Amino acid sequence: MSMGGALSAEIGSAETIWFNPAASAKLNVPHATATYGTLYSGLEDSPVVHTGAIAWPFERATLQAGYHTLRLDPWSEMSGLIGVAMVLHPRVSFGGEVRVNAWNSGRYGNQSWLGSLGLLYEVGWVTPSTYMRLSLVSANLTGWYSAEGSGRATGQPGRSYTVGAQLIVRGKKVSLDVEHDMDLWDLRAGYELDARWGLNFRTGAGIRIDETVDRTWHVGMGYEWTDYHFDYAFTRSADIASFGATHRLGIGRFF
Image (cartoon, rainbow, N blue to C red; front, top):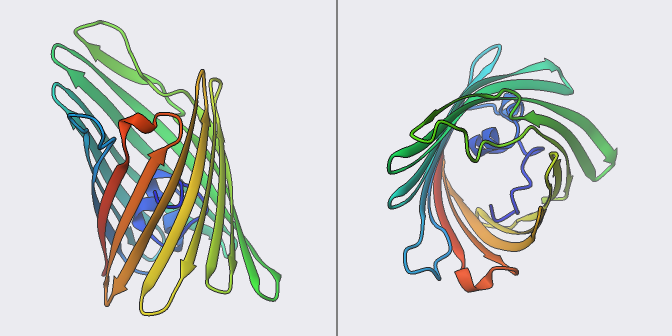
């Protein structure tokens, strides 16, 4: 998140399964991550989020699974996904996943089953020092749902399309995602610097244009030590600054 969520063309982490189901096809070893975060620390009761993801490559395909929870009593949300990604061609990867989104608030609740498809294209070396990737994702393709209590679905996401690009230049990454559905535009950009001693520094920004506009900025850092990496991300909104910042701590392991 310290890169603004611009990860649809990123291949280095299991967390990419939330942004592009095709990206994990490029992982060479199994990878698992877990994240803990507090949203809007300026509120008296800050929502707490937990996220986990795993991508396990086999000879012909990569299997992936993830979960995400958000809690603020009496409100709770949960997402879970399973999927598969494979390399169709040295330059082209494809992936698909099925996700369940659910929320509950007392006697009201909703559950939605959604599908996503993704592509990753390795453009390659566009200059002697610049490597490029492109991505395309179509998310929330299905609309099966079940509602409890109210008898109707609320908060079910609409179908969205995301195009993304990533440039890698001498240890630096620049990523950009543009997402659109019938109601909103979401622009996300991120920058990562691979420094010495296993350190990575990241920054990003996002603009979500719906009935209102939410502009966010992000900073963070990561540290890799043997088979582990540790990450921190700080996010703040310029339009709802009174809600406070969001903090996330993560740990990941390569197997």
